[in-house]
Image 1: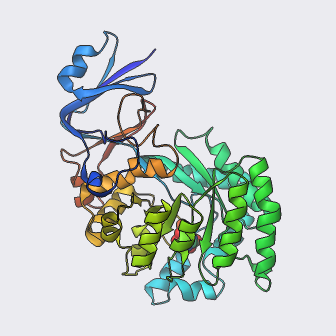
Image 2 (image 1 turned 120 degrees about the vertical axis):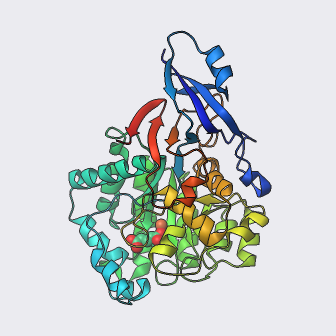
Length: 417
Ligand code: NIG
Ligand code: FE
């Protein structure tokens, strides 16, 4: 048995609270212990409290981590990411600096389809090496669990290739990955004239195989005119549900096209993006028990100005989640601290609401709320030591490297020089 005591955090941020996603004023309650710490045995939190209390109950052979006046926070849970892809989109990035829009570039055959071409020619081994680099980035930014979508293969063989890379990454990195099948990310080049036939392929060949090999926990669809309309999205997600997959959805990102309402009708676990969602969509999400996953990094990186309406969502009682949307096109950032900064400055979430949305609420959106996302007895000891004395510094000093060390299951997996 291996026992570890974390002591003397100026703020030991537990997020202890009700055993469900946090809503309304609860989003602002972090349950901070001053000069706090915890006892961890075999990777599981045994107790949290004041440093004095923890020192008193720690057995003799306990290893000590002295946080020395810094902040301790649960590891970030990034509930929306696309970490497996080939190549990059640097040329498109530069084209946007010269005035082209994401939509114009996609209409000319760029965008998602350009990454699909590069991902298809990459071997499993090449994708694995590249994804490992991304996994290291996530860890260095304080993320200990990340949702990982496929969606840059768009053929049976290439989607399976990506999902196997995600599965096998577990052997290579301590980062926990939650796999999501996103076969309906875009209509690939060879089906441009017959998108309905591509939907058939996803429903009749990809989904059954993904389910049979248990390669995904969730199914996602990019519900957007020009990609998959409401009818196609509804058909695919209904089929996915029948295979026992949970549902997530890229909804109302570029147009307010009824995505939030569809997510609610299908009782999806999450509806993600929601930049264009209005009051009726917000009310529908509440009624359908859907968690909104907000991705301000994609708005920022595309140079857009319309962020999702986080305040209205919180007021409506939704259990808001924040995530990076890490991908090579719209949001090339693995950094949850950057997302927290954007949430505070652009969506007027308080720093505490941001932290809740990036940890415990995100954990619940991945069906892991009873295991991770807060530091409470019985939970997995995934945590981050921050090089600051007040958790608000994380969102405030944006871009500053403040992650001092990162622990997964009580083991240190990364440390700043
Ligand atoms: O979440 N909107 C669809 N999917 C991604 C973009 C992917 C890409 O551009 O490669 C997103 O923003
Ligand atoms: Fe996305």
